[in-house]
Every structure is written in C-alpha cells, then in structure tokens.
Length: 191
Length: 376
Image (cartoon, rainbow over all chains, first blue to last red; front, side, top):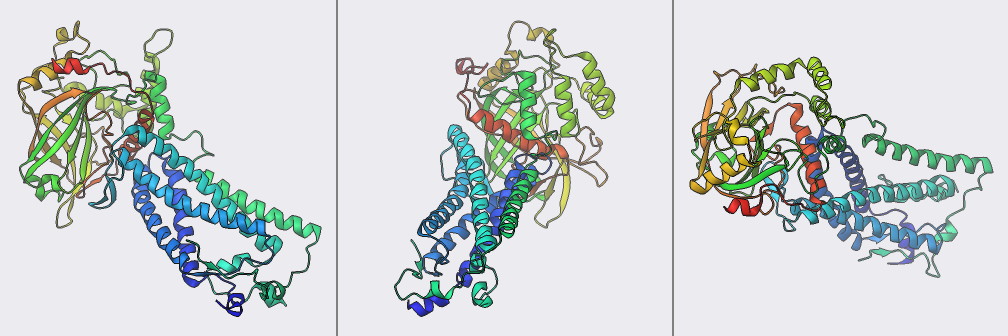
C-alpha cells in the first residue's frame, strides 16, 4: 500500500465499522440480559430464551469480523499515541476478541456439560460440544460469570480510553470508528 | 492474523506532520473533560449494576430463594434444594397419536420415546423419613427422536398450595423450624395462611383427595397451565397429569413404621416384579379457565385426552442413576408446547437452575436409598 493512500485512510473500512457497531450493540444488550436474568424470577425464562441464540450470533459475528479484519487495511494509529499506548491498544483489542470468542463457547460448553438441550428457536437446537459432566458444568458456569464481568470491565476500559482520547487528547480517535463517514480528522478540518 | 495497518513509522509518512495539535487545554478545561469521562463511565457501570438488581437487595432472586431453602432444610452437599430424596427410573413413553390434534410436539406422534425419570419426596432433607403426607414428586425427561427434549416436574397434589413465587418463599420461611423446639412456629404458619386465603382453599382441595399407598399408584399433576400449539398454529391452554394404571389403595400409616424408606422400597419391589405404567392425560382448558393460578383447579367436566402410556421398567439409586445430574426444568419444552402466564413457571425454571448450579459444584454425598437397596 502506498504511503499517500495510507495517510488518506483515517477511518476503519465501512465493513469494519459496521461489524464494530453490530458487535457493540449485541454485546451490550447481551451483558444487560445476562446480568438481569441471573437475578430475575419473573423474566428468567424469557431472557434465557434470548440469551442462547444471541450468544451464538455473537460467536458467528465475531468470527466473521475477525476474518474480515485479517483481509482489511487498518488506519494508522493516531500520531498522539506513544508506542507503549499502541501496544496496549493492540493487546486490549486482541483480549476483547478472545473474550468474545471464549464467552459464547463457555456458555455452549456449559449447557452441553449440564446436558441441557441447547435450543436456539423452535425445534432448532445445537449439538453438545462437551460430555455430560456436572463438575465441568459448575466450572464453566463460574468461568462464564467471570468472563462476563471481565468483558464488561474490558468494555469500560475500551470506552473510557476512546472518551479520553476524544475529549481530552482530542486526536479524533472516535471518528476512526464513527458509524458515519468522516473524510478528515477534526483537527485537520479545524486547520 | 493481523490485518495490515497503514504504517505511520515509515520515514516518508507525513501523517504526523499533517495532524495539527489542537490548542492546549486550560487546567479547568482538562479537569472538566476528565470529569466528563469519569461521569460517563460511572453512569454506564451504575446502569449495568442496576439492571443486575444490585440496588434492590430486597427483591426475591433465585439466589435468595436458594438461600431460603438452605436456611430451612440445611445445606446438604450435592443434593437438590427441594425434592432432595429420590430414586432414578427409566423406561419409555408410547404415544398413541391422540395428542397430535392438540400439539405438533413430536412426542405426541404415534411412537416410542425413551424416558428418564425421578421419584422424590418434597423438602430439602435428602434423608427425610418416608411418610404419607410428604409431597411426592415425579420428574420426567422425554428424549424425542429429533433431538428435542420435554422435561416436566410433577407432584401428587391436584393443585399447588401457592400461586406466586413470593408466596412460595413466604410459606417456606414460615415453615422454618424454630431452633428451640425443632418445629415450625405454628403462629407464623397461621399468619401466612391468614394472609393467603388461596392457600387455605388449595389445601382444602388437596386434603379432599385421599393419599395413595405409594409412588406406583399416585397420580402426578403438572400443576401449571401450558399452551399447546397444533400444526395449524391453533393454541389451546392445557394441564397434564400422569394417571397410574396400578389400582388405588389408601395410604397405610402402619407401613410407615420402622422403615424410613418404605415408599421407595415398595416402589423398588414393584418395579422389580413388573413394569409400572401411567397414562398421560391432557386436560383442555376453556377460554375462562385461569392459566396463571396453580391453586385453582379447572372444572372436572373439561375434556381429558389420553395421549399415551408411560412404562417404567428400570430403577436405580439417585446416587448412581442417570437422573441425579438432570435438572427437571419444567420449561424445557419441545416445539408445540409453551409456558402459560403462570408466574410460578419462570420462577421454577430460575430456582431449579440455581439449585442445579449449586449442587453441580458440590461434593456428592451418599443417597438415602443406596445402590445396594435398589438391587435387592
């Protein structure tokens, strides 16, 4: 890729931004459903019935997104970011990907180990990925809970970092992933 | 795995120089902006905790329900919070095809479905002595040919004694034995009943049905209402029951003397002699029949449809059998069946799941009805 094109690219590609906001919407909904359902009697069944298919949807979206990322050109980091910040950003991005893959797998695995039918909708259900073993279920259930809180904290850190860059450093970090098209960074427009 | 990132470190990269640094912020402005970040993050975290019920500690949750069971009946490692004492049975359900006009559920197509079941006694004590008055439970898991499952958890009373999860919990708390006397405080139960006329009414109905001599000749009722949907998408409210083929005999209190497991031992002996059978009867509700109140029976005149016969020919100890690690969640329904608006259903599903999760991680202790007792 030539330098002139690289410098012109300020934003993630339209497809990457679409997947980002799709993931954000589903994952935040899912975190809300998850934390609500475990404390609910009246809505437990309804929420669990949404939780299962939505979890599998996340798994599918994240895998597609990861493949898409592999074949996409990423915009450069903002010049304001130090090499250390860049490696932290890259590592946390990878960590989020890992969580988003592991969490649905933990859920699927835990239902398998409990010998629950893994119903998506109607009579459509998934095959078990682990043998019936309640100790394994108990372990994965704990892991699913820990991963959920970890996912929420990682989201907070990610969101906080973007807010910090956008409001305090003012390097246009948000516009890189903005759902709409931004031709130039705000700083450049201001100049 | 990494997508190409346009490289800002290349020598002729001009991206750094083209990006103008915005004018520096004043101290106050930096402070306000930092504060903004903090406030937004705080609000997001608070919203998350709010949705999770953290600001409403008085609300009845599956965890509080489970704690209530453990307070009243004690903690029994590896056992269900309720219906702790039980045995595993297995066999098959032979559908006669009559149910297909009520529901498109595959279980009703004429044919055979393997079944795993569990007979149990109510309460959280896994070593409770068998007695006629203790509630008998029957959980059944139907393995359907397309990989679906139908699970149901029934008891031997025609109606349920409470009609909301809160009432169930309050009754549980009222039944807690006083540490001094070892017995429930009669005043607390009287106060509960005074506040719950529907429970008084339900108890009258329950007491009007004589208790049978054992598990084998007990009728088991699904209690809650459900919806069945047929192939043309017409839905009807239903309840179901398992009616024994074994003839009724009244409970014999003399039999209870001496053998703490006399009900289970009688069940073991009869299954070893010949298979036990129940007919699955679907009761079809009319538009005005309540679907949200398990304390109220539907009129006797409602249509009953015999949809098939359950045959049990195997029995095993809870300890070594296939049912101990199964959650008989009453909302694991196949396509063609759906929950009604009965508030107990979702709560049962939630609390059963909580009970299952707790015991799954606990060390399993021996069952009251041991493997050697079942082999006799």
